Structures are given as structure tokens and as C-alpha cells.
Length: 126
Image 1 (cartoon, rainbow, N blue to C red):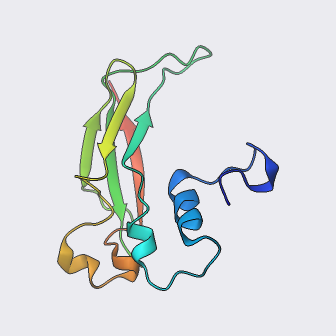
Image 2: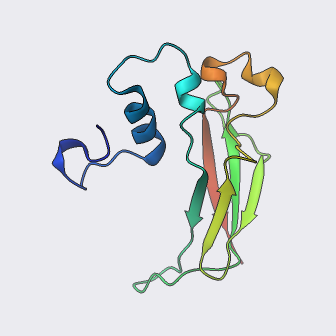
Image 3: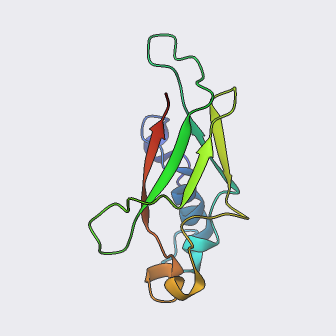
């Protein structure tokens, strides 16, 4: 349904949104389970060198800083830190280490059972 809205690549949904919409098949979701059940298996972050060639940048630290529900602020402490490989990639296995879920006690208090709705993704290198 929503893999290529408006007939092309120019306006494309992110993978999670497309999977959630396609899973529901045009129906309004009955619960927040559709959000948690449609995560992609992994999320890849890519770092490239500054400049025209955009060569992959290995050894770049990628940190995820939560923006907690209704806080309107970014946490100073990251909940997950990765380092890019020689191909400039850092991958999160969402089946084992989904940073959106957080502790169970936090999930039960928030919409869709998600502890953290958003992140600031910070790339740093020497």
C-alpha cells in the first residue's frame, strides 16, 4: 500500500512506517501492538567522509540520545553507542537491542508500549 506513495521514489516512507501501514492493510489499528510488531530487524547508520567523494568513514562513534515522552529535551546520556566499521556502517539488531523499548516498567506507562519515542543520533570522530 505505502511502499511508494504518490507513484515514485521522491516521497518514500521510512521502512517502519511502510511496514506498519502495510500490516494494517488500510484498517485503523486496534492497539499499539502494530507499532512494536513492525520494527525492521535491523537499523543501519552510515557515516561518510566530508567532501565530494563521500567515501565511507570507519571508526565513527554513533550514539543514540533519547528524547523521552513529553520531555521536550534530549538526554545527555546515550542509551546506545556504536562504532562504524571500515565500510562506514553501524548496525543495531532490533530483535535483540531495540532502544525504543526500554525497561518494561517504562513501556507500560507510555503510548504504544514504547519507552522512548525519539532519539537524537550523534556522530562523532577525531
